[in-house]
Image 1 (tube, helix red, strand yellow):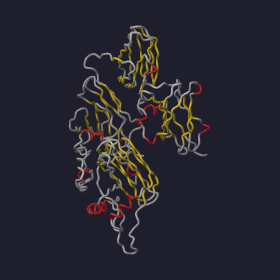
Image 2: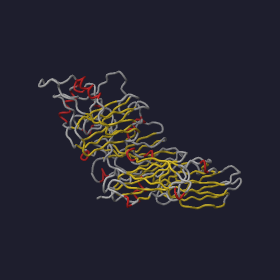
Image 3: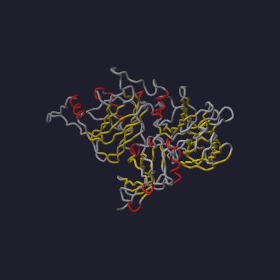
Image 4: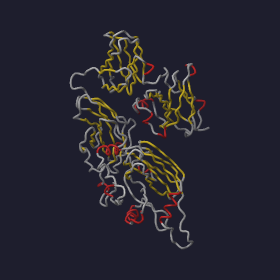
Length: 568
Protein backbone atom coordinates (compact mmCIF):
# COMPACT_ATOMS: atom_id res chain seq x y z
CA UNK A 1 0.00 0.00 0.00
CA UNK A 2 1.75 3.12 -1.18
CA UNK A 3 0.84 6.74 -0.56
CA UNK A 4 -0.12 8.82 -3.66
CA UNK A 5 0.11 12.59 -4.51
CA UNK A 6 -1.65 14.91 -7.15
CA UNK A 7 -1.65 18.44 -8.82
CA UNK A 8 -2.91 20.44 -11.86
CA UNK A 9 -4.66 18.94 -14.92
CA UNK A 10 -7.71 20.49 -16.59
CA UNK A 11 -8.66 17.70 -18.97
CA UNK A 12 -12.18 16.97 -19.96
CA UNK A 13 -14.32 13.85 -19.68
CA UNK A 14 -15.44 12.03 -22.81
CA UNK A 15 -18.90 11.18 -21.68
CA UNK A 16 -20.44 8.24 -23.62
CA UNK A 17 -19.71 7.88 -27.31
CA UNK A 18 -19.07 4.92 -29.55
CA UNK A 19 -16.06 6.56 -31.08
CA UNK A 20 -14.58 8.10 -27.92
CA UNK A 21 -12.76 6.48 -25.00
CA UNK A 22 -11.04 7.73 -21.89
CA UNK A 23 -7.23 7.98 -21.83
CA UNK A 24 -5.64 4.61 -21.17
CA UNK A 25 -2.17 3.35 -20.35
CA UNK A 26 -1.68 3.08 -24.12
CA UNK A 27 0.60 6.12 -24.51
CA UNK A 28 0.13 6.42 -28.29
CA UNK A 29 -3.65 6.35 -27.95
CA UNK A 30 -3.52 8.85 -25.08
CA UNK A 31 -1.39 11.31 -27.07
CA UNK A 32 -3.82 11.03 -29.97
CA UNK A 33 -6.76 11.73 -27.67
CA UNK A 34 -5.30 14.81 -26.01
CA UNK A 35 -4.69 16.44 -29.40
CA UNK A 36 -8.44 16.42 -30.00
CA UNK A 37 -9.44 19.34 -27.73
CA UNK A 38 -13.13 18.93 -28.44
CA UNK A 39 -12.78 15.42 -27.02
CA UNK A 40 -12.08 16.89 -23.56
CA UNK A 41 -14.69 19.65 -23.67
CA UNK A 42 -15.77 20.91 -20.23
CA UNK A 43 -14.80 18.01 -17.96
CA UNK A 44 -11.68 16.55 -16.32
CA UNK A 45 -10.01 13.22 -16.90
CA UNK A 46 -7.55 11.49 -14.57
CA UNK A 47 -4.90 9.53 -16.52
CA UNK A 48 -4.14 6.04 -15.22
CA UNK A 49 -0.73 5.96 -13.51
CA UNK A 50 0.20 9.66 -13.80
CA UNK A 51 0.36 12.14 -10.93
CA UNK A 52 -1.41 15.37 -11.80
CA UNK A 53 -1.49 18.81 -10.18
CA UNK A 54 -4.45 21.15 -9.97
CA UNK A 55 -5.84 24.25 -8.32
CA UNK A 56 -9.04 24.87 -6.36
CA UNK A 57 -10.80 28.15 -5.83
CA UNK A 58 -12.32 28.46 -2.38
CA UNK A 59 -15.88 27.09 -2.09
CA UNK A 60 -15.78 26.01 -5.76
CA UNK A 61 -15.88 22.21 -6.12
CA UNK A 62 -13.99 20.47 -8.89
CA UNK A 63 -14.78 17.06 -10.35
CA UNK A 64 -12.55 14.50 -12.03
CA UNK A 65 -13.57 11.32 -13.79
CA UNK A 66 -11.98 8.07 -14.88
CA UNK A 67 -13.24 4.74 -16.15
CA UNK A 68 -12.48 1.23 -14.90
CA UNK A 69 -13.21 -0.95 -17.90
CA UNK A 70 -13.29 -4.41 -16.29
CA UNK A 71 -14.70 -5.85 -13.08
CA UNK A 72 -12.36 -7.04 -10.31
CA UNK A 73 -9.74 -4.42 -11.22
CA UNK A 74 -7.35 -3.18 -8.48
CA UNK A 75 -7.72 0.54 -7.86
CA UNK A 76 -5.75 3.06 -5.82
CA UNK A 77 -6.52 6.80 -5.59
CA UNK A 78 -4.54 9.31 -3.51
CA UNK A 79 -5.08 13.01 -2.83
CA UNK A 80 -2.35 15.27 -1.42
CA UNK A 81 -3.45 18.66 -0.06
CA UNK A 82 -0.64 21.17 -0.53
CA UNK A 83 -1.40 24.29 1.50
CA UNK A 84 -4.98 23.98 2.81
CA UNK A 85 -7.26 21.20 4.08
CA UNK A 86 -9.48 19.57 1.47
CA UNK A 87 -12.83 17.85 1.45
CA UNK A 88 -12.98 15.08 -1.14
CA UNK A 89 -15.05 12.04 -1.96
CA UNK A 90 -14.88 9.22 -4.48
CA UNK A 91 -18.06 7.76 -5.95
CA UNK A 92 -19.00 5.15 -8.55
CA UNK A 93 -21.57 6.05 -11.19
CA UNK A 94 -23.37 4.13 -13.88
CA UNK A 95 -22.18 4.92 -17.40
CA UNK A 96 -24.78 6.85 -19.45
CA UNK A 97 -26.89 4.98 -21.96
CA UNK A 98 -25.61 5.04 -25.53
CA UNK A 99 -27.42 6.55 -28.48
CA UNK A 100 -31.15 6.34 -28.17
CA UNK A 101 -31.68 5.92 -31.92
CA UNK A 102 -31.54 2.18 -32.44
CA UNK A 103 -28.96 1.30 -35.06
CA UNK A 104 -28.46 4.94 -36.00
CA UNK A 105 -24.96 5.15 -34.54
CA UNK A 106 -25.58 8.78 -33.58
CA UNK A 107 -24.49 9.49 -30.01
CA UNK A 108 -26.50 11.69 -27.70
CA UNK A 109 -25.47 15.36 -27.62
CA UNK A 110 -22.46 15.86 -25.34
CA UNK A 111 -24.28 18.35 -23.09
CA UNK A 112 -27.06 15.84 -22.48
CA UNK A 113 -24.55 13.13 -21.59
CA UNK A 114 -22.71 15.39 -19.17
CA UNK A 115 -25.94 16.48 -17.50
CA UNK A 116 -26.98 12.86 -17.14
CA UNK A 117 -23.79 12.09 -15.18
CA UNK A 118 -23.90 15.22 -13.02
CA UNK A 119 -27.52 14.59 -12.08
CA UNK A 120 -26.75 11.07 -10.90
CA UNK A 121 -25.44 10.88 -7.35
CA UNK A 122 -23.74 7.53 -7.69
CA UNK A 123 -22.47 5.30 -4.86
CA UNK A 124 -20.06 7.01 -2.46
CA UNK A 125 -16.99 4.82 -1.88
CA UNK A 126 -14.81 7.04 0.31
CA UNK A 127 -14.71 10.54 1.76
CA UNK A 128 -12.16 12.55 3.74
CA UNK A 129 -11.76 16.02 5.23
CA UNK A 130 -8.38 17.35 6.36
CA UNK A 131 -4.83 18.12 5.26
CA UNK A 132 -3.32 14.63 5.49
CA UNK A 133 -2.15 12.66 2.48
CA UNK A 134 -5.09 10.26 2.26
CA UNK A 135 -5.86 7.42 -0.12
CA UNK A 136 -8.52 4.94 -1.23
CA UNK A 137 -7.38 1.46 -2.24
CA UNK A 138 -9.32 -1.57 -3.37
CA UNK A 139 -7.98 -4.91 -4.56
CA UNK A 140 -11.11 -5.60 -6.61
CA UNK A 141 -13.16 -2.72 -8.01
CA UNK A 142 -16.18 -2.99 -10.31
CA UNK A 143 -16.17 -1.53 -13.77
CA UNK A 144 -17.83 1.81 -14.24
CA UNK A 145 -17.38 5.56 -14.20
CA UNK A 146 -15.63 6.90 -11.09
CA UNK A 147 -16.00 10.51 -9.96
CA UNK A 148 -13.62 12.35 -7.63
CA UNK A 149 -15.01 15.58 -6.20
CA UNK A 150 -12.79 18.04 -4.27
CA UNK A 151 -13.59 21.19 -2.30
CA UNK A 152 -11.55 23.75 -0.35
CA UNK A 153 -13.51 25.84 2.15
CA UNK A 154 -10.56 27.78 3.62
CA UNK A 155 -8.80 29.36 0.66
CA UNK A 156 -7.64 28.93 -2.93
CA UNK A 157 -5.21 26.05 -2.92
CA UNK A 158 -3.12 23.54 -4.86
CA UNK A 159 -3.36 19.77 -4.57
CA UNK A 160 -2.07 16.57 -6.22
CA UNK A 161 -3.87 13.47 -7.38
CA UNK A 162 -2.65 10.04 -8.42
CA UNK A 163 -4.75 7.10 -9.57
CA UNK A 164 -3.73 3.70 -10.87
CA UNK A 165 -5.28 0.35 -11.74
CA UNK A 166 -1.95 -1.42 -11.29
CA UNK A 167 -0.85 -0.38 -7.77
CA UNK A 168 1.26 -3.49 -7.12
CA UNK A 169 3.53 -3.02 -10.13
CA UNK A 170 3.59 0.79 -10.22
CA UNK A 171 5.17 1.55 -6.81
CA UNK A 172 5.62 5.22 -7.79
CA UNK A 173 6.31 6.46 -4.26
CA UNK A 174 9.55 5.61 -2.47
CA UNK A 175 9.21 3.34 0.54
CA UNK A 176 10.15 4.33 4.09
CA UNK A 177 12.41 2.19 6.32
CA UNK A 178 11.03 0.36 9.35
CA UNK A 179 12.21 3.30 11.47
CA UNK A 180 11.10 6.45 9.61
CA UNK A 181 12.30 8.95 12.22
CA UNK A 182 14.70 11.76 11.51
CA UNK A 183 17.31 11.84 14.29
CA UNK A 184 19.26 14.85 15.55
CA UNK A 185 22.81 13.51 15.95
CA UNK A 186 24.62 16.77 16.65
CA UNK A 187 23.46 20.14 17.91
CA UNK A 188 25.40 23.40 17.89
CA UNK A 189 24.69 27.11 18.14
CA UNK A 190 24.25 27.52 14.38
CA UNK A 191 24.28 23.92 13.09
CA UNK A 192 22.17 20.80 13.44
CA UNK A 193 23.20 17.41 12.02
CA UNK A 194 20.40 15.10 10.92
CA UNK A 195 20.50 11.40 10.09
CA UNK A 196 17.87 8.91 8.94
CA UNK A 197 17.61 5.32 7.78
CA UNK A 198 17.95 4.83 4.00
CA UNK A 199 14.87 4.12 1.93
CA UNK A 200 14.45 0.48 0.77
CA UNK A 201 13.65 1.92 -2.65
CA UNK A 202 17.35 2.67 -3.03
CA UNK A 203 18.97 -0.09 -0.97
CA UNK A 204 16.71 -3.01 -1.96
CA UNK A 205 14.87 -2.07 -5.15
CA UNK A 206 17.92 -0.20 -6.54
CA UNK A 207 15.76 2.62 -7.89
CA UNK A 208 17.25 6.13 -8.21
CA UNK A 209 16.22 8.41 -5.34
CA UNK A 210 17.27 11.66 -3.76
CA UNK A 211 16.59 13.14 -0.34
CA UNK A 212 15.37 16.67 0.29
CA UNK A 213 15.78 18.31 3.71
CA UNK A 214 13.36 21.05 4.76
CA UNK A 215 14.03 23.44 7.64
CA UNK A 216 11.23 25.60 9.03
CA UNK A 217 10.71 27.97 11.94
CA UNK A 218 6.95 27.30 12.05
CA UNK A 219 6.05 23.60 11.94
CA UNK A 220 6.67 20.23 10.31
CA UNK A 221 5.26 19.47 6.86
CA UNK A 222 3.26 16.44 5.74
CA UNK A 223 4.16 16.57 2.05
CA UNK A 224 6.74 18.08 -0.25
CA UNK A 225 4.08 19.91 -2.23
CA UNK A 226 3.06 21.67 1.00
CA UNK A 227 6.67 22.85 1.24
CA UNK A 228 6.60 24.11 -2.33
CA UNK A 229 3.33 25.93 -1.76
CA UNK A 230 4.86 27.63 1.28
CA UNK A 231 8.09 28.50 -0.53
CA UNK A 232 6.38 30.34 -3.34
CA UNK A 233 2.71 30.96 -3.88
CA UNK A 234 3.49 32.27 -7.38
CA UNK A 235 5.51 29.47 -8.92
CA UNK A 236 4.95 26.43 -6.69
CA UNK A 237 3.35 24.50 -9.54
CA UNK A 238 1.86 27.03 -11.92
CA UNK A 239 0.19 30.37 -11.44
CA UNK A 240 -3.37 30.14 -10.21
CA UNK A 241 -5.81 30.40 -13.11
CA UNK A 242 -7.89 33.57 -12.99
CA UNK A 243 -11.66 33.00 -12.78
CA UNK A 244 -13.41 33.56 -16.07
CA UNK A 245 -10.30 33.15 -18.23
CA UNK A 246 -10.16 30.33 -20.73
CA UNK A 247 -6.62 29.22 -19.98
CA UNK A 248 -5.28 26.30 -21.97
CA UNK A 249 -5.52 22.92 -20.22
CA UNK A 250 -3.00 21.58 -22.73
CA UNK A 251 0.07 23.42 -21.42
CA UNK A 252 1.71 20.19 -20.34
CA UNK A 253 4.90 22.00 -19.31
CA UNK A 254 3.08 22.82 -16.07
CA UNK A 255 1.67 19.36 -15.43
CA UNK A 256 4.84 17.29 -15.01
CA UNK A 257 4.25 15.19 -18.15
CA UNK A 258 7.22 13.72 -19.94
CA UNK A 259 8.40 15.28 -23.17
CA UNK A 260 8.72 13.24 -26.32
CA UNK A 261 12.48 12.99 -25.84
CA UNK A 262 12.71 11.56 -22.36
CA UNK A 263 10.71 11.20 -19.17
CA UNK A 264 13.86 12.24 -17.31
CA UNK A 265 13.43 15.77 -18.62
CA UNK A 266 10.53 16.27 -16.23
CA UNK A 267 11.35 18.74 -13.51
CA UNK A 268 11.51 17.83 -9.84
CA UNK A 269 8.87 20.02 -8.18
CA UNK A 270 8.94 22.39 -11.15
CA UNK A 271 12.66 23.05 -10.66
CA UNK A 272 15.55 21.35 -12.50
CA UNK A 273 16.68 18.15 -10.81
CA UNK A 274 20.24 18.31 -9.52
CA UNK A 275 22.69 15.51 -10.07
CA UNK A 276 22.71 13.04 -7.23
CA UNK A 277 25.15 14.02 -4.53
CA UNK A 278 24.99 17.74 -5.33
CA UNK A 279 23.03 20.32 -3.36
CA UNK A 280 20.07 22.08 -4.91
CA UNK A 281 19.05 25.21 -3.03
CA UNK A 282 15.58 26.61 -3.48
CA UNK A 283 14.95 30.31 -3.75
CA UNK A 284 15.76 31.95 -0.38
CA UNK A 285 12.75 32.68 1.79
CA UNK A 286 12.47 33.69 5.42
CA UNK A 287 11.82 30.92 7.96
CA UNK A 288 11.89 28.01 5.48
CA UNK A 289 14.61 26.35 3.40
CA UNK A 290 14.65 23.31 1.11
CA UNK A 291 17.88 21.53 0.16
CA UNK A 292 18.06 18.40 -2.03
CA UNK A 293 21.23 16.43 -1.26
CA UNK A 294 21.25 13.39 -3.53
CA UNK A 295 21.26 9.91 -1.93
CA UNK A 296 23.14 10.75 1.29
CA UNK A 297 21.24 9.99 4.52
CA UNK A 298 23.11 12.40 6.79
CA UNK A 299 23.16 16.17 6.49
CA UNK A 300 24.30 19.17 8.53
CA UNK A 301 22.06 22.23 8.41
CA UNK A 302 24.12 25.41 8.85
CA UNK A 303 23.59 29.16 9.20
CA UNK A 304 20.92 28.73 11.87
CA UNK A 305 20.23 31.22 14.65
CA UNK A 306 21.37 30.40 18.19
CA UNK A 307 18.78 29.49 20.81
CA UNK A 308 16.07 29.08 18.16
CA UNK A 309 13.66 26.19 17.65
CA UNK A 310 13.61 24.68 14.16
CA UNK A 311 11.50 21.94 12.59
CA UNK A 312 13.22 19.44 10.29
CA UNK A 313 11.65 17.25 7.62
CA UNK A 314 13.19 14.77 5.20
CA UNK A 315 11.49 13.67 1.98
CA UNK A 316 12.66 10.85 -0.26
CA UNK A 317 11.85 11.40 -3.94
CA UNK A 318 11.95 8.97 -6.83
CA UNK A 319 14.25 10.58 -9.39
CA UNK A 320 12.29 9.06 -12.29
CA UNK A 321 8.69 9.64 -11.21
CA UNK A 322 9.42 12.78 -9.11
CA UNK A 323 7.02 11.46 -6.48
CA UNK A 324 8.01 11.74 -2.84
CA UNK A 325 7.32 10.31 0.61
CA UNK A 326 7.75 12.09 3.96
CA UNK A 327 9.85 10.77 6.83
CA UNK A 328 8.66 11.46 10.40
CA UNK A 329 9.96 14.96 11.08
CA UNK A 330 11.56 16.24 14.26
CA UNK A 331 12.38 19.52 15.96
CA UNK A 332 15.33 20.92 17.90
CA UNK A 333 16.46 24.14 19.52
CA UNK A 334 19.94 25.35 18.68
CA UNK A 335 22.39 26.11 21.50
CA UNK A 336 22.55 29.54 23.02
CA UNK A 337 25.22 31.96 21.92
CA UNK A 338 26.56 32.42 25.43
CA UNK A 339 26.58 30.05 28.37
CA UNK A 340 23.29 28.20 28.52
CA UNK A 341 20.85 30.08 30.72
CA UNK A 342 18.16 28.59 32.87
CA UNK A 343 14.68 28.37 31.33
CA UNK A 344 11.94 29.91 33.47
CA UNK A 345 8.82 27.78 33.92
CA UNK A 346 5.48 29.54 34.26
CA UNK A 347 2.86 28.16 36.62
CA UNK A 348 0.42 25.94 34.73
CA UNK A 349 2.03 26.36 31.29
CA UNK A 350 3.38 23.41 29.27
CA UNK A 351 6.96 23.95 28.04
CA UNK A 352 8.61 21.99 25.20
CA UNK A 353 12.19 20.98 25.98
CA UNK A 354 14.88 19.43 23.77
CA UNK A 355 17.84 17.69 25.39
CA UNK A 356 20.68 16.46 23.20
CA UNK A 357 22.30 13.05 23.67
CA UNK A 358 24.22 13.04 26.97
CA UNK A 359 23.34 16.74 27.30
CA UNK A 360 21.59 18.61 30.09
CA UNK A 361 18.99 21.35 30.38
CA UNK A 362 18.25 23.51 33.42
CA UNK A 363 14.86 24.97 34.27
CA UNK A 364 13.77 27.23 37.13
CA UNK A 365 10.38 27.47 38.82
CA UNK A 366 9.55 30.31 41.21
CA UNK A 367 5.94 29.89 42.40
CA UNK A 368 3.98 32.33 44.53
CA UNK A 369 5.61 32.66 47.99
CA UNK A 370 2.58 31.20 49.82
CA UNK A 371 2.30 27.96 47.83
CA UNK A 372 1.46 24.74 49.71
CA UNK A 373 2.66 22.16 47.19
CA UNK A 374 4.18 21.85 43.73
CA UNK A 375 3.24 19.28 41.08
CA UNK A 376 5.53 18.47 38.14
CA UNK A 377 4.20 16.71 35.05
CA UNK A 378 6.88 15.31 32.71
CA UNK A 379 6.06 13.70 29.35
CA UNK A 380 9.12 12.14 27.66
CA UNK A 381 8.30 11.90 23.94
CA UNK A 382 11.05 9.53 22.78
CA UNK A 383 13.83 8.08 24.94
CA UNK A 384 14.02 8.21 28.74
CA UNK A 385 15.33 11.32 30.46
CA UNK A 386 16.61 11.86 34.02
CA UNK A 387 15.01 14.58 36.13
CA UNK A 388 16.41 16.09 39.31
CA UNK A 389 14.57 18.72 41.38
CA UNK A 390 16.27 20.86 44.02
CA UNK A 391 14.53 23.26 46.37
CA UNK A 392 16.82 26.05 47.57
CA UNK A 393 19.81 23.81 46.78
CA UNK A 394 18.47 20.68 48.54
CA UNK A 395 17.91 17.60 46.34
CA UNK A 396 14.27 16.49 46.61
CA UNK A 397 13.84 14.25 43.60
CA UNK A 398 15.98 12.18 41.21
CA UNK A 399 14.15 9.89 38.77
CA UNK A 400 14.38 8.45 35.26
CA UNK A 401 11.25 9.28 33.25
CA UNK A 402 9.92 7.31 30.30
CA UNK A 403 6.47 8.16 29.04
CA UNK A 404 4.51 10.44 31.37
CA UNK A 405 5.13 10.87 35.11
CA UNK A 406 3.68 13.08 37.82
CA UNK A 407 5.62 14.23 40.90
CA UNK A 408 4.11 16.13 43.82
CA UNK A 409 6.37 17.89 46.33
CA UNK A 410 5.56 19.67 49.55
CA UNK A 411 5.91 23.43 49.25
CA UNK A 412 7.90 25.86 51.31
CA UNK A 413 7.27 29.62 51.61
CA UNK A 414 9.34 31.69 49.18
CA UNK A 415 11.12 28.56 47.87
CA UNK A 416 12.72 28.37 44.41
CA UNK A 417 13.01 25.11 42.44
CA UNK A 418 15.82 24.15 40.06
CA UNK A 419 15.08 21.33 37.58
CA UNK A 420 17.89 19.50 35.79
CA UNK A 421 17.03 17.34 32.77
CA UNK A 422 19.76 14.96 31.55
CA UNK A 423 19.63 13.11 28.23
CA UNK A 424 20.67 9.47 27.91
CA UNK A 425 23.36 7.81 25.82
CA UNK A 426 20.98 6.44 23.17
CA UNK A 427 19.94 9.68 21.56
CA UNK A 428 18.41 13.11 21.91
CA UNK A 429 15.30 13.55 24.03
CA UNK A 430 12.19 15.63 23.50
CA UNK A 431 9.77 16.21 26.33
CA UNK A 432 6.99 18.37 27.67
CA UNK A 433 7.10 19.62 31.26
CA UNK A 434 4.57 21.47 33.37
CA UNK A 435 4.99 22.84 36.90
CA UNK A 436 1.99 24.07 38.84
CA UNK A 437 0.79 24.90 42.33
CA UNK A 438 -2.82 24.26 41.18
CA UNK A 439 -2.89 20.68 39.83
CA UNK A 440 -6.67 20.75 39.42
CA UNK A 441 -6.28 23.39 36.67
CA UNK A 442 -3.34 21.90 34.79
CA UNK A 443 -3.32 21.09 31.06
CA UNK A 444 -2.38 17.40 31.34
CA UNK A 445 -5.20 14.86 31.72
CA UNK A 446 -5.37 12.85 34.91
CA UNK A 447 -3.96 9.38 34.36
CA UNK A 448 -4.13 6.00 36.10
CA UNK A 449 -0.95 4.37 37.35
CA UNK A 450 -1.46 1.48 34.93
CA UNK A 451 -1.67 2.77 31.33
CA UNK A 452 -1.66 -0.56 29.56
CA UNK A 453 -4.28 -1.79 27.11
CA UNK A 454 -5.53 -5.27 28.04
CA UNK A 455 -6.71 -7.65 25.31
CA UNK A 456 -9.08 -10.53 26.15
CA UNK A 457 -7.76 -13.62 24.39
CA UNK A 458 -10.93 -15.66 24.84
CA UNK A 459 -13.01 -12.92 23.19
CA UNK A 460 -10.91 -12.81 20.03
CA UNK A 461 -12.68 -13.74 16.81
CA UNK A 462 -11.70 -13.75 13.15
CA UNK A 463 -13.03 -10.22 12.70
CA UNK A 464 -12.91 -8.58 16.14
CA UNK A 465 -10.93 -8.14 19.35
CA UNK A 466 -12.06 -6.92 22.76
CA UNK A 467 -9.82 -4.68 24.85
CA UNK A 468 -10.04 -2.70 28.09
CA UNK A 469 -8.18 0.14 29.79
CA UNK A 470 -8.34 2.08 33.02
CA UNK A 471 -9.61 5.61 33.57
CA UNK A 472 -9.72 7.95 36.56
CA UNK A 473 -12.18 9.82 38.78
CA UNK A 474 -11.94 12.79 36.43
CA UNK A 475 -14.03 12.72 33.25
CA UNK A 476 -11.73 12.61 30.19
CA UNK A 477 -12.07 11.96 26.47
CA UNK A 478 -10.58 8.68 25.23
CA UNK A 479 -10.01 7.85 21.55
CA UNK A 480 -8.87 4.46 20.25
CA UNK A 481 -7.08 3.92 16.92
CA UNK A 482 -6.09 0.77 15.03
CA UNK A 483 -3.52 0.06 12.31
CA UNK A 484 -2.68 -3.20 10.59
CA UNK A 485 0.97 -4.25 11.08
CA UNK A 486 3.19 -7.19 10.13
CA UNK A 487 3.22 -10.29 12.30
CA UNK A 488 6.83 -9.65 13.37
CA UNK A 489 5.98 -6.21 14.79
CA UNK A 490 7.71 -5.90 18.18
CA UNK A 491 7.98 -3.55 21.15
CA UNK A 492 11.11 -1.81 19.84
CA UNK A 493 9.33 -0.95 16.61
CA UNK A 494 6.40 0.48 18.56
CA UNK A 495 8.74 2.86 20.37
CA UNK A 496 10.53 3.88 17.18
CA UNK A 497 7.42 4.41 15.12
CA UNK A 498 6.50 7.90 16.25
CA UNK A 499 6.98 10.69 18.73
CA UNK A 500 4.94 9.71 21.79
CA UNK A 501 3.91 13.35 22.31
CA UNK A 502 2.09 13.44 18.97
CA UNK A 503 -1.66 13.43 19.53
CA UNK A 504 -4.56 11.79 17.69
CA UNK A 505 -4.61 14.69 15.21
CA UNK A 506 -1.55 13.11 13.55
CA UNK A 507 -3.37 9.82 12.83
CA UNK A 508 -5.23 8.96 9.63
CA UNK A 509 -8.99 9.30 9.74
CA UNK A 510 -9.33 5.71 8.52
CA UNK A 511 -7.46 4.43 11.62
CA UNK A 512 -9.92 5.95 14.11
CA UNK A 513 -12.23 3.46 15.83
CA UNK A 514 -14.16 5.69 18.25
CA UNK A 515 -13.98 8.38 20.95
CA UNK A 516 -15.79 8.26 24.28
CA UNK A 517 -15.95 9.96 27.68
CA UNK A 518 -15.93 7.97 30.92
CA UNK A 519 -14.91 8.13 34.59
CA UNK A 520 -15.87 6.66 37.94
CA UNK A 521 -15.64 7.93 41.50
CA UNK A 522 -14.80 4.34 42.45
CA UNK A 523 -11.34 3.76 40.97
CA UNK A 524 -11.92 -0.01 40.97
CA UNK A 525 -14.77 0.56 38.52
CA UNK A 526 -12.95 3.14 36.36
CA UNK A 527 -12.47 0.69 33.52
CA UNK A 528 -13.98 0.53 30.06
CA UNK A 529 -14.09 -2.17 27.40
CA UNK A 530 -14.49 -1.94 23.65
CA UNK A 531 -14.96 -4.52 20.90
CA UNK A 532 -13.18 -3.49 17.71
CA UNK A 533 -14.93 -5.01 14.72
CA UNK A 534 -14.36 -5.17 10.97
CA UNK A 535 -10.91 -6.77 11.21
CA UNK A 536 -9.39 -9.35 8.86
CA UNK A 537 -8.77 -12.99 9.93
CA UNK A 538 -5.24 -13.86 11.01
CA UNK A 539 -4.01 -10.23 10.90
CA UNK A 540 -2.04 -8.24 13.51
CA UNK A 541 -3.21 -4.78 14.56
CA UNK A 542 -1.51 -2.03 16.55
CA UNK A 543 -3.95 -0.42 19.00
CA UNK A 544 -3.44 3.01 20.56
CA UNK A 545 -5.58 4.81 23.15
CA UNK A 546 -5.28 8.60 23.54
CA UNK A 547 -6.65 10.49 26.54
CA UNK A 548 -7.20 14.25 26.15
CA UNK A 549 -7.44 16.59 29.12
CA UNK A 550 -9.43 19.80 29.52
CA UNK A 551 -6.38 21.81 28.43
CA UNK A 552 -6.25 19.95 25.12
CA UNK A 553 -3.01 18.04 25.78
CA UNK A 554 -3.16 14.38 24.71
CA UNK A 555 -1.31 11.44 26.22
CA UNK A 556 -1.05 8.03 24.59
CA UNK A 557 -1.40 4.79 26.55
CA UNK A 558 1.09 1.97 25.95
CA UNK A 559 0.53 0.55 22.46
CA UNK A 560 -0.87 -2.95 22.17
CA UNK A 561 -0.50 -5.44 19.31
CA UNK A 562 -3.40 -7.90 18.92
CA UNK A 563 -4.02 -10.63 16.36
CA UNK A 564 -7.34 -11.96 15.12
CA UNK A 565 -7.98 -15.69 14.88
CA UNK A 566 -7.26 -17.38 11.55
CA UNK A 567 -10.11 -19.88 11.84
CA UNK A 568 -13.42 -19.45 13.62
